[in-house]
Amino acid sequence: MTTAAQALGLWGWGREMQALYTVLLAQRRPPQTIIAPAAEHAAIRTHLGPATPPLQDTTAPDLSDLHTLYKTPGQTLYAPVIQAFIARGGQVTSGTNLWFAQPRPGAMVVGVTGTKGKSTTSALLAHVLRAAGKKVGLAGNIGLPLCAVWGQTADIWVVELSSYQLADFTGQCDVGVVLNLYPEHLNWHGGQERYYHDKLRLLQQSKQGLVNAQNADLAHHPRAASAQRYNTPNAWHVAGGVVRRGTTPVLALADLPLLGDHWGDSLCAVATVLEALGLDAMARLPAAKSFTGLPHRLHTLGTAHGLTWVNDSIATTPYASQA
Image (cartoon, rainbow, N blue to C red):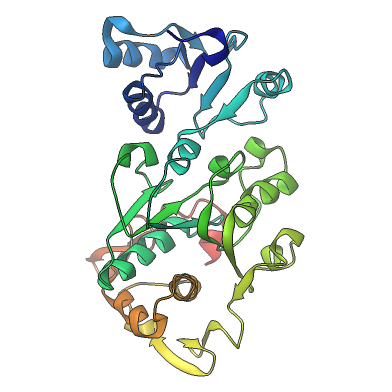
């Protein structure tokens, strides 16, 4: 029987929270309440059936009887009701933290974040690692919740992490790479300074941190001072349309079936991660030539009436459109 000191609540009912709910039930730790918009209540009842925990609306949640709150990434950590809950001793955590707390003997974990490009870089890294013969798990913010792969094994886990997931992140990565920083999600974080601070939490929670030296906001941030840098002339960088390791040319951007010079940044990040994992990046990076990219990211749809149609609908900020 769950006591008041152990009482759990869930805030949210998207894919991530449903996967977390399944894990908590398997651990015999059922939540005492679920907080979600009123429109989602019917879906919760349909999903859970007659044993549905008490439901609360997000407009006026009561957290007084809870000890631990598992929060959906979409709900800001800085909401007054959540900050008041923390101030009186309540614990706020996530499915991401729960997954990271589990032992994974022999497996390496790479965390990938950045304002833009994290899904593409995560998928590209997984592609190259698989071509190297590694058993790779790819999950996180890329669309597959970590709790949905609970119990699965891999040689290397590539985990995409959003700023929402990093704000209260307590896990540890073997390698953490931050691709770039631009102002975004300021309403969730309450301002640019806290957004950058939360994003760079990945470096604090990684044994080895990697950052893009060509992104000004990132390279000059105090929290990135001790991280290893790529996109410098003596490391992995792009010059003359070719990805190079120092002075050695390795891969021409023109050899990729992809649009955009910004691919150079992703390739340099991937190569630097490969080296951090102890792999021969110069030998492995050419496997990127068979990577076809993700939907909605400069995705060529075809040609009609003399025009080439490109879907770049994921470019939801000026920085992405400029790239």
